Image (cartoon, rainbow, N blue to C red):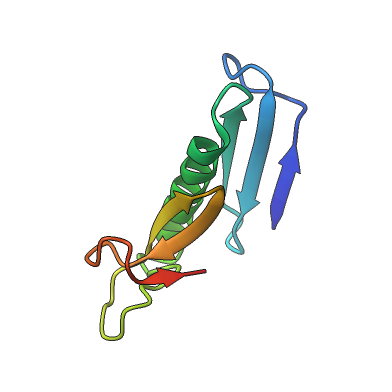
Length: 98
């Protein structure tokens, strides 16, 4: 379950958005995005932290999986023109996947 809110800010985070992901096993992670953080950086931070949490909860199962056939590693988040894409970390972003 994914929850997004603006109340209950963690100390030192200032205003912003707070996203909590709760996994099926009951574990959860909250990402606090400071309102002063530029939007592309906030998107990337959110994607990286949520991906790390999902990888931990699935025992390392790649999520999202790399879009390159035969690759078993997870895709890497990338922000371009305000849009978050996922790509193969070995292909320099040439292989985009949503």
